[in-house]
Structure formats: C-alpha cells, structure tokens
Image 1 (cartoon, one colour):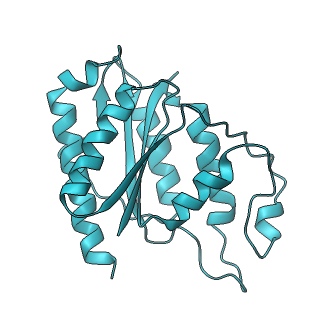
Image 2 (cartoon, helix red, strand yellow):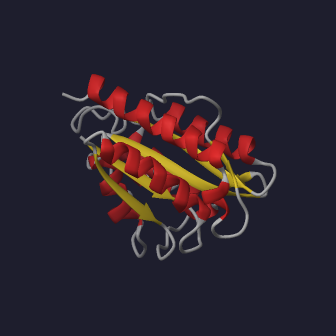
Length: 196
C-alpha cells in the first residue's frame, strides 16, 4: 500500500507541509509506505483544455515543459492521495490546483482500450490551512475534486482545516494536529480494508 501526500504550498517548511508531516507519520506508523511531495520547486502549467488526453488511448496530458508528468505518475501509482493547500483568497494555491485539474482530464474518463478511470476508489482527502478564515471554501473545492474523481474520502473528528500563518504556527495548533492525525488513521484503516 502506498500513500502520497501532496503539499500545495509555495513556501519551504510551510505550515501545510507540517500538517502533512503529521499525516505521513501517522500513515507510516500504520505500515503504509508514504511519500510527502511539495510543489515548492515544481512548475505545473494550467490545463489548456485541448482535450488531447481525453481522446488519446494513452490518456496522457500532451503538454510538456513542466513537472506535471512526474507528479501525475506518482498520483496514479498511489493507493491513497492526501492533498494539503494553503488558502489564498478562499481558494487552493494555483500550482496544486493546476496539477489536480490536469490530472482529472485523463483520470476521469473510461477508455475502451486502456481500462477504467485512473483514480477509481482510491482513498484520499484534503487538508486546508489559513490564518483565520477561508479554509472551508478551499476544503470544499478540494472535496469536489476528490468526489469527481471517484475517491473514497474518510472523515475525521472535525473538518480537515488548520489554523496557521507564520512558519511554525502549525506546531501550536493542537486541535488541527489531532484532526489531521485522526483523518490519517481513518485513511490507513480504509486502505487496509480496500487494498488487497
């Protein structure tokens, strides 16, 4: 079983990454192989809506020149995907959103020759982080993405939101850490029930 934690923050050592570290440690303690990948040094251009990936049997994005393909491959290989994002103007950060939108186009279509949808019944869910407000809008944005891609999304003891502004604030958000830890425990439990 493999889990992928994607940090959508543009900052190194960000609060978003800190919450995802809690999730990753929890998954690893449940014997789930887990990678944490940040988009800090990645470039992911927006989808051009060319529909080439929709019609190609390979279901691959035809856009080159950025880091999308490497990240997409890791998403397809994973049994679980957790996406964390800071909140910018009540929305997720553009780089992680570009990745998710471009992953959806080849991911959501059944193809007669290349099989079922790429993310069907993977386990996953979002974590959003903001200074004061906006987490719920960004959380809903990500939940809609997980729902569209036919993920199984477990809950937690509250919504998966963290309260933090300056680097290091996440470590002081005891409730947020506990929410993320419970969410990751539920991801691990569900993976053990669904992945052979």
